[in-house]
Length: 245
Image (cartoon, rainbow, N blue to C red; front, side):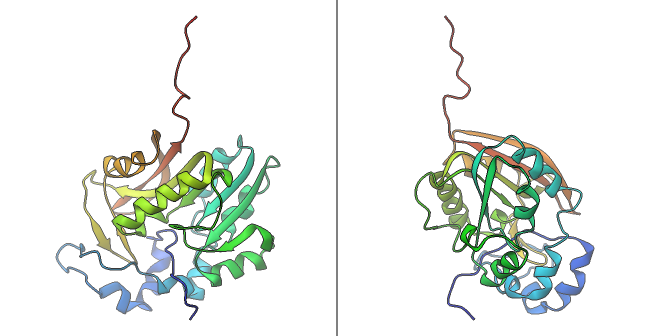
């Protein structure tokens, strides 16, 4: 095993993961409250992203929802775009058809990055690295995005992730993640992986610590306990100002 911190990728709370969950019984049961499914935050569930079965599932999980949505977001963008926690590069491949953007990706799993290289993503556009502390310079990309990753980080990790996305992104950063279907802050939970299942307001508070303008819009992604939301984060505080002559 490589001596690098392993990073969470999208939440796959769909029937196709039942078989994978059985093969990760130790992950599924560690620290779990049998009454509520809520447990104490200790560490992220990480080893799953070095498992080939997960790499296979990441090839299809966004069909009919987030993969359509990210194309709408990217269609009018220009310049360099960074896919944070890019996984196997499937999303990068989908959005790279837009001629005005140059898509780069970072993920901490060297296994998943190798899958991205195999699918034809230029190795010069891929980085093995940690989303909370990248080696990119300030304003490296014009736009960035993450899909189903941020909710798996600890509270401290979320703040570091968001702050880092702000530092390396010039214009705007888009983040898709699940929020609680109940609208309540249900906390750190355990299904296939550990993740935060909290309200839109809980997440807005996190994003607003770095970004002055944040908008939450619906995603078609959903499961039994969560619904998907995109958080569109803009750096330009002056974008909404109106000048009157």
